Image 1 (cartoon, rainbow, N blue to C red):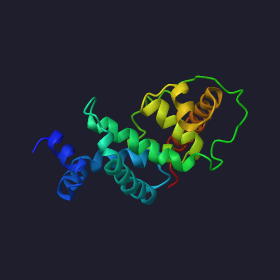
Image 2 (spheres, rainbow, N blue to C red):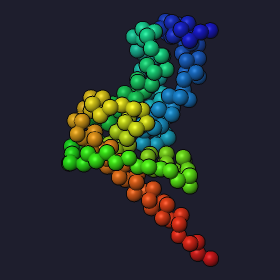
Image 3 (cartoon, rainbow, N blue to C red):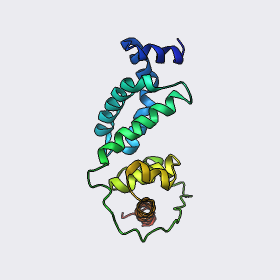
Image 4 (cartoon, helix red, strand yellow):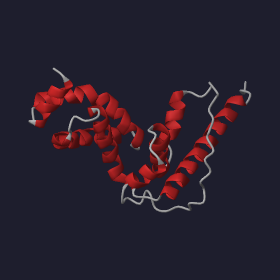
Length: 181
């Protein structure tokens, strides 16, 4: 059965079609949820909540653009909705707009470590970092999505980069220490 047919069937509340859509997209959309959630369990909850929203709004999908992209946007907005109004994005000094890029050219740093330290960032920094660096949103788009100013978005990105840079430098320094025998 084609994806379009599955979507049409989902628009008619067909449970089997919904299950197939879930099976087709849950892994990719879980990755999205994990990226923006505080932890694995929260990401699982966000995935389930996001699919409920997808199936409620599936009649709004007009078959223009990819269904995966449409679904991803719903997932991101679902997760971000939890942070709006929760004080996560309270205004912090916006003076930091340094766009220094953290260069990671050392093969000694594992992807698992990088993902872990990104996950450990405070919510406001992690969300802006992921939206800007990982998903390519502009500061203007991020500001609109999170109901913050573009200056706050830039500031949060700069702070996220500083924190990550410090953690990477600490990690590298520990790796360079001679081991005790």
